[in-house]
Image (tube, rainbow, N blue to C red):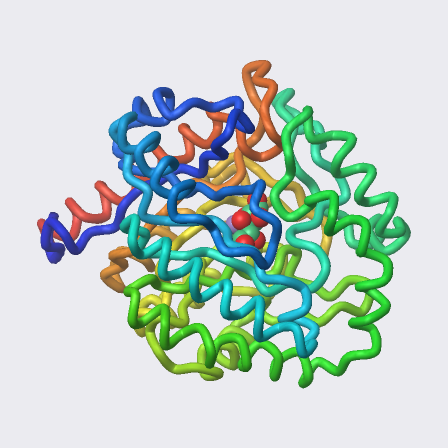
Length: 368
Ligand code: DNO
Ligand code: MN
């Protein structure tokens, strides 16, 4: 590969849920051309507790036995007390640091997390039918505002085809209404301060243990129920990265999350932050807007959505991106019954397509 040393090259990975909580097997993932590893998590460890080393070692061994690597964790969630800035946060931050040390011990290089208050990603529908007979996750801002959080939780869990939904853990749902009220009273600046407090404590240890922190954008990228937003556009991403200037304070650049806002110029955002070495992990997927703040997810292929995937991949390539890439959510196709967004087939198509673009861009660079 021109311009890239062998060990200086992006790696294509795939998200996988251990513990029997995935319809997709490691053996199937191993057969997707070019996929070298998985992003996994221990979803049964209560948020705020240390991830035990023996569990991590077992997870790594299981993945390695299938011929795959475990260099990325998605995600270790942040305890709500840290986001709220409560006095108890120090205990949870200490645990977070210990988890980073344990991750480093088993060879993890990159930690994806998010700092969204109350809820992780949010959609108004989990099985929106597309014309091609597939179904996808969809978002309609007005529908979401009309639904109360309890109704949303019901929609999310009722349609998850029996799989857990990361970010929609039962204990989180119980506290949802009270948490929303808590944040309504908090200023945005206070939320930023709480974020900085966390980063300033944790990033020195991420450096020490050589684990790159990669925050995931807010999804959707607009405020709902008056909740603060951190990672939703270029200005806020700059502000976030400036809170702590270490390269270990970096990004998961999720094209579909940021792409929810039509104002975001994704290739430009990638160029700015990849050139600074601040993107460690890329989630690549496409979205199709029906209106402003109304969109469906779509196949990865550019003509199926609003994002130009050639420009997206080129922006990573040209800025010598050497982190991890995974195809993000796919459509549910060919009769597959899987966790919404996380079937095998359409994500495998996405991985091949992204690798095809990468190869073409790379070979083209060699003849120029
Ligand atoms: C949704 C995912 C997110 C992501 C977290 C990272 O499918 O992209 O749940 O894993 O926000 O913490
Ligand atoms: Mn994502």
